[in-house]
Amino acid sequence: MRRKLVAGNWKMNGSRAALAELDAIAAAAAAAPGIDVAVAVPFTLITAAAERTPALAIGAEDVHEADSGAHTGCVSAAMVKEAGAGFTIVGHSERRADQHETSHDAWAKAAAAHRQGLNVILCCGETEAERDADRAERVVQAQIEKSVPDNADGSWFTLAYEPRWAIGTGRTPTLEEIASIHAIARSKLKTLIGDRAAGVRILYGGSVTGANAATILATDNVDGALVGGASLTAAKFVPIIEAAASL
Ligand code: PGA
Image (tube, rainbow, N blue to C red; front, side, top):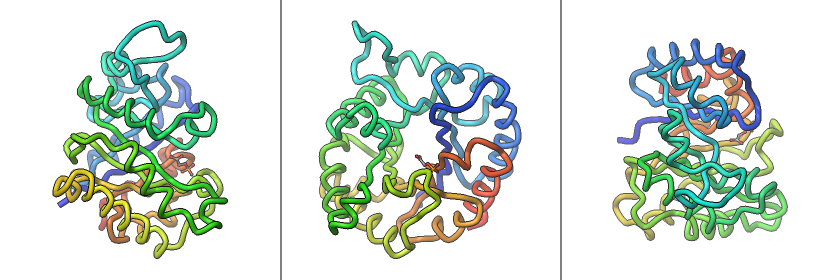
């Protein structure tokens, strides 16, 4: 049985003052022992967030693929772990778009994070042009093939399907479209890692809100949500946690 995971992604948002939002988020997480709740915050907030809400899983939004070295401006998995992170996101579509990261980069970052004992949420998802060209399934399959480490299993590895055109737009795929990609992702994982695929959570991400969370989270093979904008405040994030907990 896969526990639902509701993960927030603050992106390049937040401040020390904004960490007050985590108090109510942590309280909602504590009231929902049947699910997992996590929040990825900017590097600069990891330590303060982890110290403020020790029971809440706090993560990074990215790590470098090397353990250390001459990479000015980058941050390693060991560094975010020491800062208090328990997990990291890798391969987010904004990093693929803004920093030209590839699926191979995501693979290397996932491996680096796992070497340091971090859990990983690895993102995949098609662009609008790819979906319009009927290529969403093939794109996601190829991303999974190139980015999922051979030793992935549900104890540390989570996949997130995030159609790029749904991120921050208020648009979401239909439930049938979500179910279809998640089923394809699950079967691709099975060809790569065998029976361990059954234990890997597959999150949906892209314009998840309190209003649509319950139906999305009840969809086959949807094991949770990766939430951007609606994770920035407890008022918007807590209803998503409650929707997941009520399933
Ligand atoms: P969104 O972002 O919820 O604001 O659409 C999701 C994400 O990028 O993880």
